[in-house]
Image 1 (cartoon, rainbow, N blue to C red):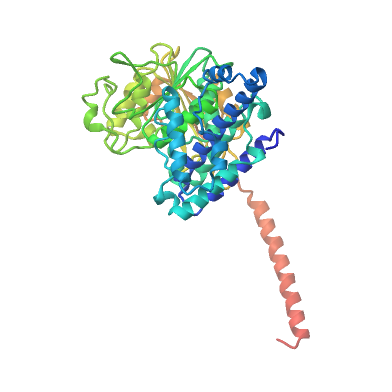
Image 2: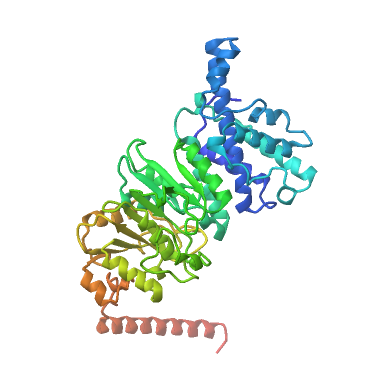
Length: 499
């Protein structure tokens, strides 16, 4: 294999081409697991091989010393559990079963880090990959797709750059785009994540939590806003396959200390300390919009008393996630940034009562209206709500950024200048004509605690005044032109003998 350093674009393209093995056969929401697990296996294998050869060069034939050094590696690979082994055995009849066993052995050898990460993907699945002959052909193609110079992940070749983490994020975004509605369940568009990261402005030493973490893209982007690596990431995810993707995503970004739990955030949160919920400096999430069956029946008896402001309706769990996020933010200093559907801002009933109490407690700092069609799986516009337990004033900033975007083929996109405009307005906390407005608590109360952005930011564009004289002159001119055209047509018809 060539030792030329591949570019990010070459790696991304080679990985996306590898997906051809499954296109038209396996649903994109499903085959992403096979591709991303294989990427992770190739990454582990190349690092293992690179380090082994380094120690071999250093210690010669002293295999015992080499073995001791390899035992201190970040990840351990048992014998015959490498990608090279799969290349040699790609024609075996039981190759799918062999891949499963290799992943199981790797998980057992790295149990503390990788427990359960591979349990949700089956490379010997007839339902997903077809009967034996077809399955073996597809797996052989997959192995060969990854056995390319562009996918040489050895550190001695690609260096220490976060090129593999970037490739993983690239794939997740493409999978989210292809998966349609299901894509929104595991990925927040990168530009939206960047906006939230800058609005929340995490600081060195912060504990950052995403209680609906999906594949981890939002949490990683927020953490990368901190200079250096002085932070801790925490998260919870209810979908087992998505949880596994998140774990691998963290490792590929060098965030091994991230504490990601597979659990239901509302009904069975696992990020606890003693009998209390764990607290964080920054809490951010893109929870499922208006989740049905979120667990209302158990909410009244919640052991953590998260719903003391009110229990949301059983068919809309938005305020269940919001209240959980506020409860786990540090008192006096914690900040919360959450993406919500616009209905959260104005719906009445139990949601209206909860919203009223949050405003009266002076927790809400800003509401940002986003453009439509930003998210995978839904074209509706969403909003960002920023809560701050350390607010030093009583006002709320409203920003209407619904027109700040670049039109895309499938999704619209926030540009860097759009993000900068929103963030600067938030930092200045000032009203700008047709863009932002600072509302005092009395105004919000007068609006019955309705946070619908058009109530505060006036974006109405009056119709331009009509100059009647100019319009009449234009009509007269057009009528003269029409008269000339009709005369010319009559002359031509007369020449042709047509009257």
